[in-house]
Figure 1 (cartoon, one colour):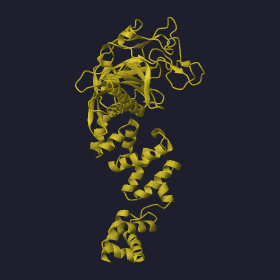
Figure 2 (tube, helix red, strand yellow; figure 1 turned 180 degrees about the vertical axis):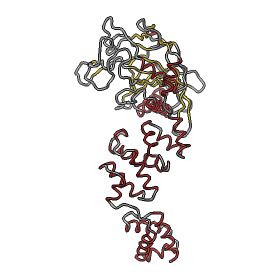
Figure 3 (tube, rainbow, N blue to C red; figure 1 turned 90 degrees about the horizontal axis):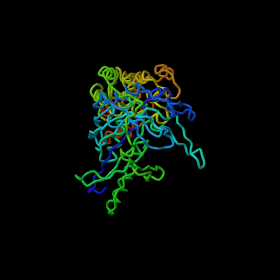
Figure 4 (cartoon, rainbow, N blue to C red; figure 1 turned 120 degrees about the vertical axis):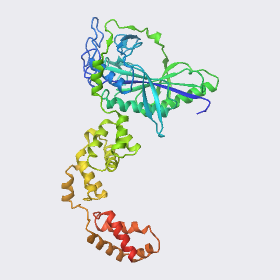
Length: 478
């Protein structure tokens, strides 16, 4: 990137709120139903059908506002945003414009290089989702599925504070973590319940903002990064060749790794916003806000700092373990009464590795937190070695069972008897006189050879610390 250009990025994130029913009617919001099954006169825009606001959607918006320290507007208004699209039954979308429920806030983002970035949030407003156009199953036609029409969305609009694709991805990941912690959105990007539009422009450092292009409907962190990187190069090439950027809406084509023009970008006046006459203003009272505040969980940043303090974890470990509420809860159950760092190593390494390899979500993990905690305890009390523990974990994960039962049935208890280990050491050293002489001559690395031989002779059951100590003493004496 030419350093004479500064990148300016803002994100508009659409979080589908996980309410049971739609925002203005009683239809289910469940994903995956047969097309047009979850519809009624309200979300089909039948004449005379009137919307009724879903209170649960309002509470979830309040929760987000409280979590990012935002202004909560005690008085907000729903408006009609007018535009034509085949899967928008009414010909307008009920949204919020001048007076959203959540005003200005901020999100502190941890960057990959260890730094932090504060990204301002301009607003978060409630609105209804449109339906979905289906093209793949038809030849020369499109189908319309209105199951999604009327699903509640919280659109979270950032300030144009990000200056690279890395910062944009870090912000989106932080927001993704937050909405799942708050349990206001399932965060499923594949199903479209968490997606974003990226506004990207270039300017000379210190100059006014340049003309932006909006990249629509990005539903993965990788696509966001690649779309922004492509757009930066496209705009730079146009500007440096003397051209000008056209304000427009673009789509990212993942197969071609490029953005392409979709339509000219509308301005607010193109949508002809006006207050929806069928919906009263939304008024928040203090008791409602406090009721929602009392339901908030410990938030990711606070939990990360507590993990570092309470479990003596490095920042990286604490960040990984608090990236999801389910993972953080699981870790805390494992860490009860055992070394926090050892528990973290097992959760982050063996557990997550096995889950990833098997394609299994943590919610369906075959090894309960209680079983993993007991396994870690058996390492700490020297019943088994770390190496044997990995074999036991593998059996627990793939075949089930109980930790102590597996240890006893397979005779895996660690050998800690000093005399027994000393006898094995003596036999191994006697059997390898040349290696012993080389060690005494200064080839220290041969200690690993002897440790390996003793562990092999003991079938991995000898206590490694004792093996090391006894070997050193024996070899140095000789």
